[in-house]
Length: 147
Image (cartoon, rainbow, N blue to C red; front, side, top):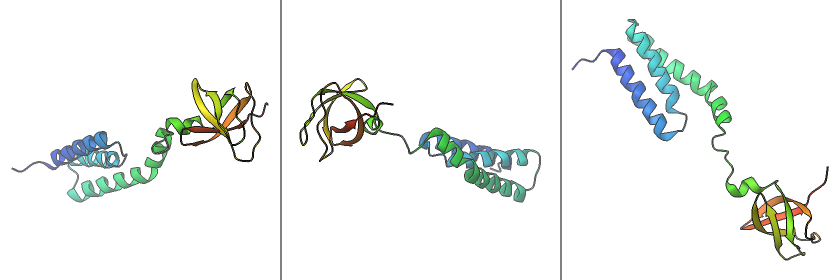
């Protein structure tokens, strides 16, 4: 069974493309593109050494120069969880928060148990607050500064 080189490159490109689709790690994609370029070179009759050089050259150049841009655009690995997304949000105190005790705050449509940082004064009901941290299931808040 003697397969032509363009077919070997095509199979490699497909396998790497499927691997990328399964993993979504943005690493196999660049090698799949490199294999596709090598496949084209093989189809036009380019020598094997040129095919191999194109495969590695294109793959490495794309990996180095375009992966960081695409990762940044897709914000991979930097996704906030639901809890992290609450930090920085504004809310309203629905039950007074006393120092060293908890109260209740309404934030983004949800009712949260809330507290102030140790040493801070309490916050009265109906006061606008900003979430500065999440500790367990409790929002740590401070009065929101009106602009």
